[in-house]
Image 1 (cartoon, rainbow, N blue to C red):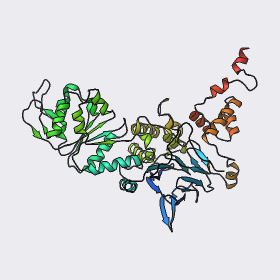
Image 2 (cartoon, rainbow, N blue to C red):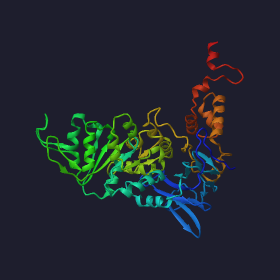
Image 3 (cartoon, rainbow, N blue to C red):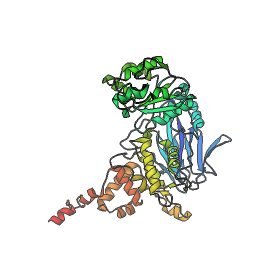
Image 4 (spheres, rainbow, N blue to C red):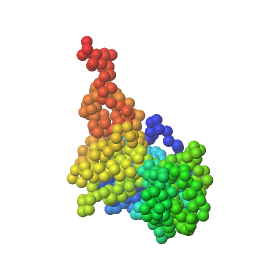
Length: 488
């Protein structure tokens, strides 16, 4: 049967005119240190067949397009995509869209597709400039700035055009999204000979802020027992990053404004000025315009700093980069000589479903703990899920949740193939009925629905259900709860 996937209670925009579909090959579940890192354009009316190959690569031959997956769990001819229409080709292990096994599905922006042990995501992007955006993805492939996100790629295109200039930039992004990492990339692309000097403005004591930035001479104030070179001078020939710039003390803001105008530094306690060649970047997770409106930040200083505003997307808006990020973070924390770890499919699904309120920083702590807790080099679902406190990082309803069928014999695969697929609304309706009928007995519910206990757990989490509610519900035909019977 054919199933069209839509998500309940989370309407998403329909396909926009002038947009194209791109397919990101996000991760191979069994090889987290070897991310595919590919983003491919899907051309209207041209079918792309996807199946098992010796390695992950796009093959174009005789007007036919095929994506080979270096995945032994994928079938030789696994699935086909034409435009935004996905069709399973009778694969051995099935095709999942957002956790639901399908025979066919109409894909929308942000949908996740699982084939074998490979995760893909469909993203739509404006057609204008799409080719240059995809070309940039290839240029950045294998570097620390690699990304598969159309949103991020378009920002990086703008940044790279001005990186070699002295134009000051403001990087806006949430906590932990990687603002300093982006600043380091901008400094590298600038080709400046000096160093990148980063300072957290919120960590500078108010009475020392001017001295920290501009320096001081010995005896300039109590405690100044030696000459000090300020951060602006230390960054001469390079780049200065003012992180959390909105926390810069009000007394120092006019002095920084003057420096941006004339590039001259005067140390505290001196009368002479020195010319300093430094490119200034500012970063903040706060709304700087709101800080201006409230009087905490000078409007003229913001105008000087914001030669170009760069918006760093949060991790929840660029989950196609999870494979790249996981690979980099695991390499950073993997002990020398240690065996490369493996994440179970269930662990990957937890990573994809999280909204990551603290972004890449939170992902890094999660993986660092997972490495320490791994058993026999395997990071499983429980070890990853335990790193997100309850109530934070709520699951994303678009992410894959179902467990793919385990490989089996041909006869067993045929016998175990489900009679039909379920949409999310059908799954919720059947689960509610099964919870009431079986009084919260998860084993009985999983048998009745023909799914694993783990799938029952996931659906309960997705739909906000609990076994306690079903145990306290009135029994069919009695109108009384078990507790009422005991009391009587």
